[in-house]
Length: 553
Image (cartoon, rainbow, N blue to C red; front, top):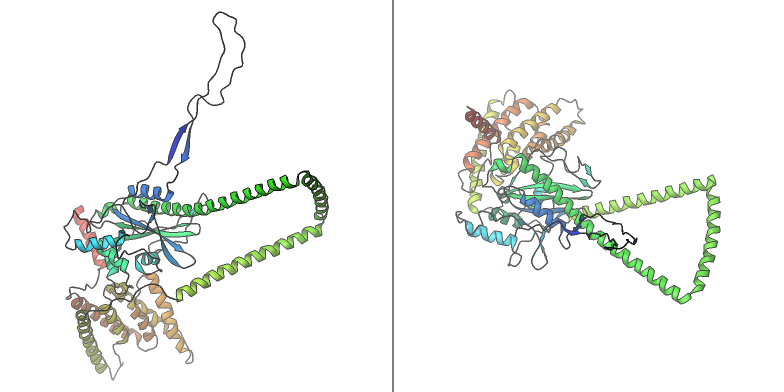
């Protein structure tokens, strides 16, 4: 299914001109004209475009040939009117139709019929066929998706997370046509099977099949060509050499290929519109010529006489108009008319933009096509029950002990409400990023610290309520900016901004957070269907550094 690029152009040679001279053997030569060559004696080569070869197909074929470790790619364009991502076909089939979705460079190892080393190869082949074969029943088409839904929506929503300025910034014009969005120093790969198994994500059939078929590494690289923007999704081989896959040469090729493919897609769209426009002009011109010919044939010389009279009258009118334009008042009037006209055009454009945004806003409120996430099995529900019961038994007993010991002095307690939200995440949404220990610890420390500092702002008794509004307003957006989003921390910010002895309560509360994390790690990992946490990022980095130092020695 790998597309092949044809030759970019065909060569043709011009005819060589010849010089003819007249002469005889024993006679005086008679002067005869000499033909001077109008073209050089060497063949002149001209390049012409190859007919019936799509520029996007050629671009994709050339790009994929130069990439290392890539299974397939997809092209998605963002529709400004609907606010959804739409898949763009990258090649044509034998019958002349378009091939949607994945453009394969090679079959995944999991779905390879020759390589049957994987235990679920039959399931992988079934999912692979559902994604690539349009003729079978149950074919999963790449339908338009909303941002945040499905693999394209998730990758699109995460664009800018690793970039320095985001997709709409850092745009540099090349030939006044192509704008390149800022990119990071490497390609960041997303675990597709992790997204497919994440209960925090809406259920998406195509995402599930991508994970089962072996497309387990994906990265979305954005592009923007004027108002045409989208992304190219690359599916990498997870069994290959990660150092080669992520080397500077390969990631630069991936980024540049994305910009080139995006430009080719934008060019193809503009080319179709331009061809339609030129055809309309040709039809209009032919209609005008046809009308003139018929008119001349019908009216003959009378028409020419009428044209001469009309020409003389037009000349007189032009002279009068020119004299009027010399007047300063006339020029001022002309300027005012032009200003009014420009204002009307600007107002109409603003109206159109407002209507487009209002339509998109109303369309989004109708909801997308995401399905209902699957419910837990009874076994998983029992694990959640055991984990929550054990954790809150410890926390409630600890709270009772603290309240009893401090009843006559500082009246301290363990605040349990945010910890209830935390255990909900740990046992019902275990793989979700917001549930991980990194987010729980850093977000809670940050939220409680901000809430405690806000308590020092002098508020009157009538305005003290504003603390509980200001604390979450600062904490929640800041968590998103820092990449430590954790919903229970928003609740903690509200609670701690309205109590006394905040710093003592903070120490007790962080002990409670640590207890919930320890219990979640112990209980969740007893189940074969759960893993908590999904990673220890700082421990992994420390081990990697220690391993490098050991090898250097």
